[in-house]
Length: 178
Image (tube, rainbow, N blue to C red):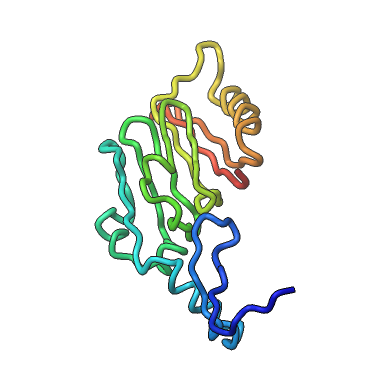
């Protein structure tokens, strides 16, 4: 084969091939840790622009606070909760990773009796509450809770603590596995 001159440029990039950077021959002499740190510095923003385009959503911690979080802080946000004032809320039971959830309204969709989570960093144990859920006539609250348990188990890998509150017309449950 043909040998490359010592100062030639070698292509280096992320595994997906979606974005690359050029590495010089001097990069080869760095230790693995130094190379990883240099690549990370080029591929991770120091802060993310977290937003929420849905005016009906309440977000905890606030969007203003999340916007000043560093990349590292966004990797493990404690006490994260998002609420649609009309249809319900999701409250995560441990830290979540918001680094790939730039617009929270696109990453989390809450509507009448429906919940979609489009971010892997959010597919963690969470307490879900749906509002404005009316029990069918002829069913007791307990019967309705059992019916909901079966329906929810088809939508999520594992749920627990399914409860129906007839006075508030809401159901709550814990998504153990998405």
